[in-house]
Length: 269
Image 1: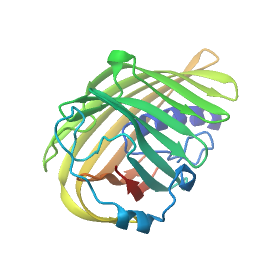
Image 2: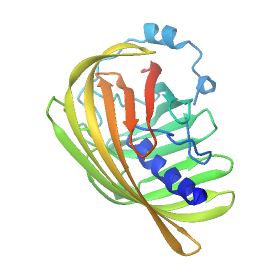
Image 3: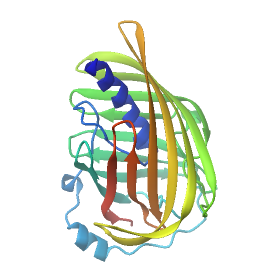
Image 4: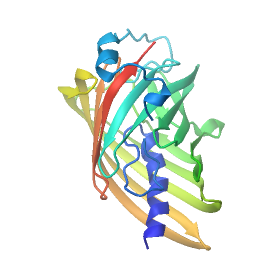
């Protein structure tokens, strides 16, 4: 049934967005997809890229990571191509001693907010210690998930060619679609390996970026009319991170959700 698949994939997209790798990758209208010039990008991508100078990232903060600048007000503009084409803006909304909050705002009006935990430069999406949650909101669709189990790291403090790491997470909560509340549970594992630094060209410019290959396996369960419905998704992701800049490109294959995310502009205070 197509309606059931909509609910299943919509929940999965939230997990992907929190991994900072994949956002809005289904042709389904209920799947949140990527923000835009309306979010304050007053310069063209070429102008912004030329005007932006990557700052030196110090190591005094628990959140200091060479491949993801954690600075309040930092923002990145991306374009998405695939089953759905759109744009979105990601920003760091607040930074604390041991964590930070970020937000994605999509051209379709969808917003996603979540918290991260920091430990000596190791960044972990969601912080279960304080009831970490992630949300998506739009006019007819919302998601509110709580992290009930978490292990591993999303992005290590140091990434060198050949390094491997993983993360597992369980999210439980609900999706609300046009006033219909649907209990949802997402369980996923993410296994990554750093391949090495290579040159990558996107709209924002050309960068020497660390190539990271990840395998994501997701088990999504939604409950409709007291009946649990399950779906499994396996996705192959390739991410490129530039030092002091952040994520510059992602490609995703698998599950009929082939897509690409590219950096078009950025602003790091």
